[in-house]
Length: 120
Image (cartoon, rainbow, N blue to C red):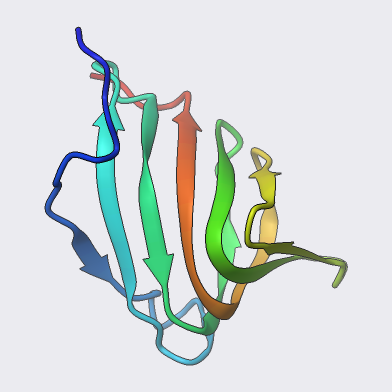
């Protein structure tokens, strides 16, 4: 197995938040998946999104580390507490998190998702 270099060209995928989760805007999300482990539990790449907000709910066995390359996001928990993550900053969305993901300024971020429920 070789090193995965994020400089390699990968074909992006595009999507938008589901209508039933949409809070504001209708942002296009772009994902460049650079790596997925053979058991599919670990995935890494780059993700970009336009301004907007939607509800999120992480499974009890899924969590994400991310680092903002450019832009600004705010993660709101169910109690209404927000955490702003800006260019050069990083955060972890814990397993079981329920709240809202809001893109305040068009964002591009590195992501690492650990999904313990995934199987090969």
